[in-house]
Length: 392
Ligand code: PLP
Figure 1 (cartoon, helix red, strand yellow):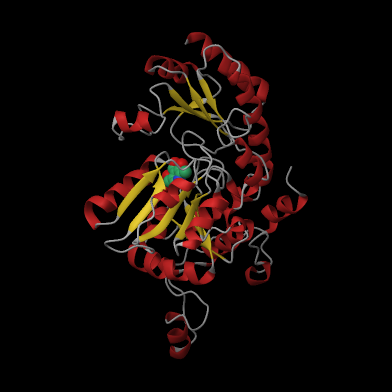
Figure 2 (figure 1 turned 180 degrees about the horizontal axis):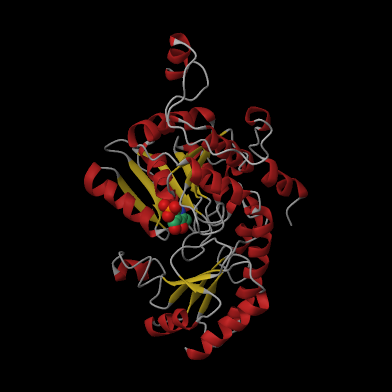
């Protein structure tokens, strides 16, 4: 179980009370323009020779408080906030590749990240080789002279696959390749990729960090120099800057992250165990189960727990759809990581844009249900799942 310090850090990280009249909750600075004291002051701030704010797209005190918070939680030097997880994904990739470069990424991961990388190949001559990320050596086998980025997503969406972060980082460092790890499923409560050598961590803060299914946001963490480079391109040129209200909601969500993750971990562990012995369930994917293909790696790198996400294989399209239609306490929806339990049917929802043969090859069967186990009473959740399975 996690040590006390993360619980304290989650509550207090990023605070800047003295700069905000002692405000315990960071104020929401709506202003899009910040006045300079004189022309020299304006020139210094505008040209980034002095820290300060001048225009909403390029920096805001509320967003900056959130950036300090996530940097501290991930044990990184600096953070950067975005309007969505995909804005953070695209900014981190585009800041590290140019036309003619090559990326290595998991064949099974969040489908929009897959589609973004395919979009780069089709339109910008940046090719990606998709590999079995459950075997770290497959990253090494895919390296080319022009490989610039190793993309890692662990545990992955929706199959909760686990990648050996330390081994992939080792291969990257030998080849001068930047590693970017999507830590959305784990959160820094359970796993800190920067401690394992990763260069950049990305989050869909829409999920566990926000935690209440009420804000869309993305975050990056890494060395100051690396993030400064991304900021110059991403915020100024691409413009995916987070809104101050959204930044505040994520920062508020993070205050209870440790408590929520503790409960998500406990509930999902209990649920995965129950599902794994149910006769109507063909397979359960959960890193905490000894049956998980990379359980030992998960034990090593997921120091806080195994997370709240489970993949449940009900084999057929009909069974998958019947189950998601049958739940009553759980919600049928396509997000995850909120306080409420959410189920979705991958083949007809999140992964419907991926060609069926490719989807099946990536292990996402017709009957796969992605289960985001919430923080409700576990007995209520178990009863709900059992009654829905009865209908299958
Ligand atoms: N990364 C992962 C693992 C996700 O699950 C998602 C969204 O589901 C994203 C990135 C994209 O985040 P957003 O929806 O906030 O753009």
